[in-house]
Image (cartoon, rainbow, N blue to C red; front, side, top):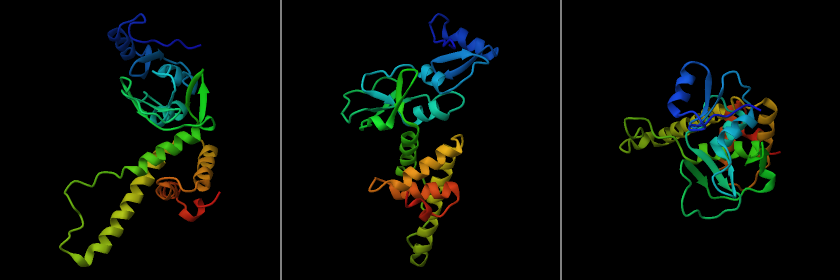
Length: 219
């Protein structure tokens, strides 16, 4: 089993960084290193994250995506979700916790540590992409209110740009996901009914895959 190195166990942070610069170690997360040449797979990545900071939490969103398909250094902030929706009085240090319910069918274990299953991870990240529209371009309002005749055209252009931004972000999300899992994700999206932001997710996915939205409307 590949050895994991953390600051103070026993090497200090400065020495770990020095060995990284020398090419002896590779930094997997902000707090974990492995020997150069180690085979980095999902089990090693989740071992690098370590156990969730509290009971009842599973790794999710960007953290789970990195575990399943990531490359390079993991996210600076660990993202987790509650197994059962509940209000947390405080967030664990260095973590962002989503207060939702994750059923057993949407969770998995690697190296004995819990995380959202691959398809649930993709769906959560896709929803996040479309739920928060990208910031408008610098320079202010592109559709001037004084030009009433151009209102419809400006709205259409803005909607098209937004769909293109969603498609680009989702394409990046799926870049390292095997084709078979992308197909399974598309089938999952097509089978959903009545979920928040579902229409946006379908539009983003159709744009990312270069297919008409109608092809994703049914399982």
